[in-house]
Image 1 (tube, rainbow, N blue to C red):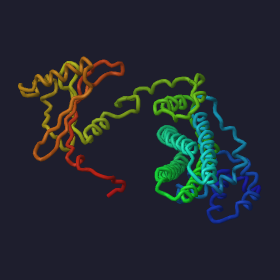
Image 2: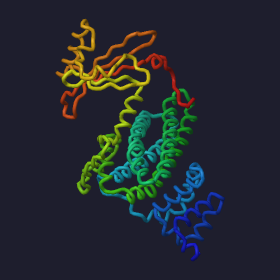
Image 3: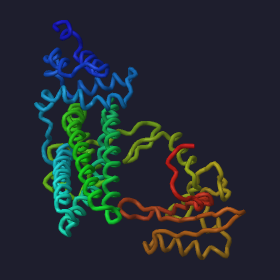
Image 4: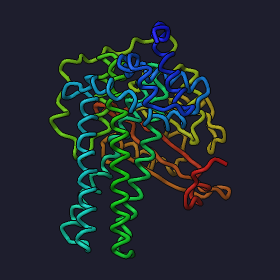
Amino acid sequence: MSEMLGKDRKEVLKGIIRSLHQGADPEAVKARFKEVLEGATPLEIARAEEELIREGLPREEVHRLCEVHLALFREALEGQKTLAPPGHPIHILMEEHRILLGLADELKGLARRIGEAGEMEPASLEQLRHVEEHLRDSESHYVREENVLFPYLEKHGVTQPPAIMWMEHDRIREAKKGLYKLVEGREGMEFQDFARQLDEAASSLAELLANHFHKENNILFPVALRVMAEEEWKDVRQQFDELGYCCFTPQAARVPLEEIEVPAPEPEVEGRVTFETGMLSKEELEAILNTLPVDITFVDRDDEVRYFNQSKERIFPRTKAVIGRKVQQCHPQKSVHVVNRILDDFKSGRRDVAEFWIQMGGRFIHIRYFPVRSREGEYLGVLEVTQDITEIKELEGEKRLLD
């Protein structure tokens, strides 16, 4: 044992998880590596999982083993102080965990009472709808994690735990969909079958949520608090606010984060264009605009053509000679009055879009004009967007698989 303790703790943790993968008895492992397990930190466990997956252990297998090795580390992990102060994104997420677990317990109790009553009483149906509404609105919780927290963790090299948590989000979504479908179709079912399936669905969802939130509260969130800087958390909170919250997110959890300073803007990098949502080189920006499946043309506030992209299959011809030309001169005289009307409406704020569609060479072409305004609402010009929507109009049903 002393020889093992002399090694890097992460390697010992990897060995523990490998042994569980090979079928070792968790209690025997716990007794043998008691000292290592007691000193394990969430970050070390996460790093061990990362390396095992890179070394070839399937992510799905690590996911399967999560319940086992998390139970093994439970005593050490539950001693960790993971709660952040009110207003912190982690505090908000953990408060939502607490409320969702309460909803899951409420659903279990409700399912039991419905079964015992032998019928769907109006009060029970109303309560069931209330729980369903909150569960549907909980999607905001997972969206914020997937689109804000996970990308920040990935920037710090923590990639596998978020990936595993996202897999679990999808399992939770499937469980909720099954519950909604069951409730929606209840009138076409025998009551006893409905009651039994509702009880099973409620118990399954409660177990999924409890296990998932335990992993996030005791592994993912402590890791995030360890690797992310204070200024990043302010940015995360701002993006949480932009995406919005669940109807049940406590207002008290959303107090301003006064102790976290607003991060300074990223310095300009030569040869790159800095936006609020990222940074691109001129080459990348131009390639992106030319890759768009639409033709775009920008006319500035003085009605002069300033830019057009060069999409793969341009619908209307554009040449560089048009740059700097008045947009009125780019249209037949008979339609200039329409052009001027659109421009006047955009400049005055009377209109936010003008659209047309035409048949051309057997293709269906959609043409739209949008006023371009600054954040303060100042008129900057007009964007013309032209798209061949012939195939789009024919789409039906769903396509979820790659060809």
